[in-house]
Image 1 (spheres, helix red, strand yellow):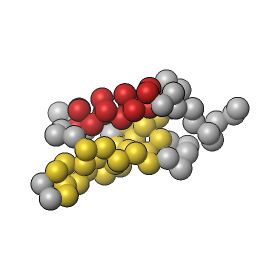
Image 2 (image 1 turned 120 degrees about the horizontal axis):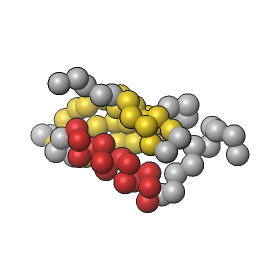
Image 3 (image 1 turned 135 degrees about the vertical axis):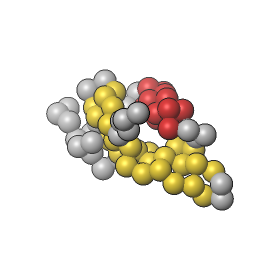
Length: 69
């Protein structure tokens, strides 16, 4: 199975930049490409982490500040 480290969300690319554990809890760090935004997610697996980051962006009505206004 190939590791998909970048996915599209609306007009932005989201990149999984790090997977790590703290005290047995899996965490995933994402970067919104072409921005200075990093999102840290706690999740039991990678696919759940992707879902959580997309839901977070949707709930916050995220607009990339580095793109044309």
